Length: 82
Image 1 (cartoon, rainbow, N blue to C red):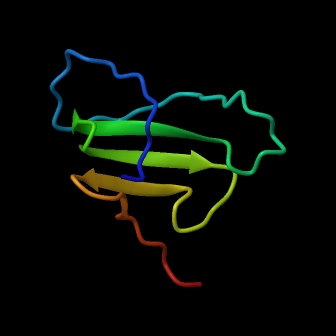
Image 2: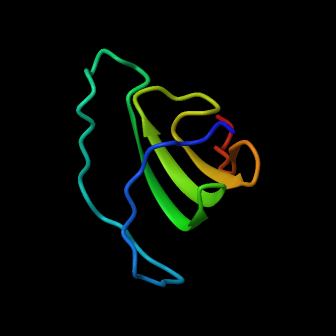
């Protein structure tokens, strides 16, 4: 399964809606265009969750909102044409 494989989870909260505000910093060398960071939500188990993928590179797998639902990740956001 192609999906994020390394994470830390904040447990003990059951929310139906949330707004996350924060600052994040990736410590990978800035010359690496594949450096990235994920924010997970609606995490049920390692094969069922949503995530936002922040990356230095944009393509069909980077800088997306993704769904992992028992199979390979799926991009679920769409950008307007233009």
